[in-house]
Length: 126
Image (cartoon, rainbow, N blue to C red; front, side, top):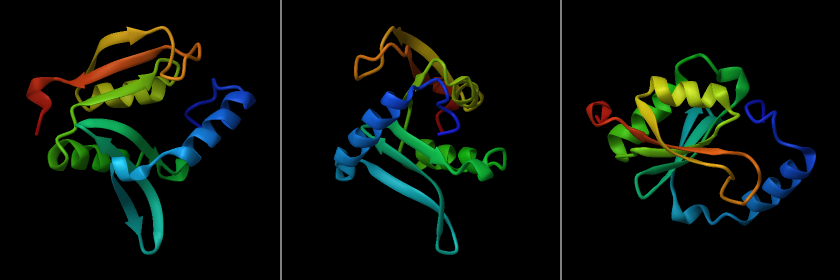
């Protein structure tokens, strides 16, 4: 997880277990494919981007923007939560037109990683 270098090993272990327990049926998940390979994916629930992942070798190639454009335009996504320490993601979401409307001292699991709750500026909605 090249974007989450602030996490400890114990955090990684805990998150890995949480991911195994996720019911992906509660999300609209779309993959960006090249041939038979998944390059990245976006998951949306109730107009909120719950997950956005891209293989690191495909960063800075416009593919994250492509996934976001799809989520905003087709899935009507207009909110996202992001770890404050994940500065690259914060900058990316800001470039996509999201602004912070709330800050939480802890993440959703109660860990000491502040969360920024962001929403799409109305003029950015596609």
